[in-house]
Amino acid sequence: MNPYLSVSDEVREAVAHSRPVVALESTIISHGMPYPQNVQTALSVEKTVRDAGAVPATIAILGGRLSVGISAEQIEFLGKKGLAVYKASRRDLPVLLSRGADGATTVATTMIAAQMAGVRVFATGGIGGVHRGAETTMDISADLEELAQTDVTVVCAGAKSILDLGLTLEYLETKGVPVIGYGTDELPAFYCRQSGFGVDYRMDTPAEIAAAMHAKAEAGLKGGMLVANPIPEAYAMPEDRMTDCINRAIAIANANGVRGKSITPFLLDQIKQLTDGKSLEANIQLVLSNARLGAEIARALCVLTC
Ligand code: PSU
Ligand code: MN
Image (cartoon, rainbow, N blue to C red; front, top):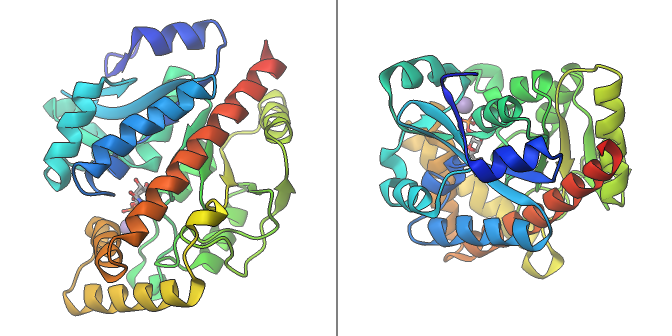
């Protein structure tokens, strides 16, 4: 037994009986949205997963343990603390665990904990990737390296154009990560349904995605898969308006010298202000939609593995 892993009874039992489970991250709670919408969203995401027939497993680092399946009170704690909670990616784990500290898990660390607990599907909003200007800043999210090595399928709404989407796709190709468009040939751009960049494969049913996951596992191929699910039509934002907002947000970040792990939360907040809060509503809706799809994939996977 891993002394740094703590799995809730509900999640442990579901995994032991091969029932569907969906992992959920906590950086989106503490750093991705303001309080109290962050807590409300995290709780409705869990409910959405349940209503779709799977067990939600929200993941965070609490008291130096990778905790899989945290409580509503713990979600409230992380949401209230907001940016004061440590944003924990892979490189932060040894120190946070040894110090008995708390941390909000990014996509990378959520994947690590999910794999340790035997959870195969993870739903979130957006992943980190290759940032615009990475040819000089070298800012490339550890999420991409995690997808290369950790066997968890991540359901997202594509990536925001605060990233260089073309370079992000190239990086994923180099690392051998399949990028699947759910009902689309194009990589969605988070707030918008299209980006102009193609995905590797289009799939139209959760069963097709589960079949690819199953084949990968049976063949002994390591690494994750990325499923990109476009934001529901009713909540999609106009592309030209978003491009303009994102460019303005990046200019503000550059003028203020914002770098490293602070850049994504900073840009999210700027974009929210520049869109009068509309980007936040879009963000909430796309996460709910990904949670539903994650649950359907987890259920389809159980049909294959049971
Ligand atoms: N994109 C979002 N919202 C988020 C994040 C990304 O739209 O909250 C978070 C995720 O937790 C992701 C992390 O894993 O930011 C990536 O951070 P970095 O680029 O510093 O690795
Ligand atoms: Mn970074």
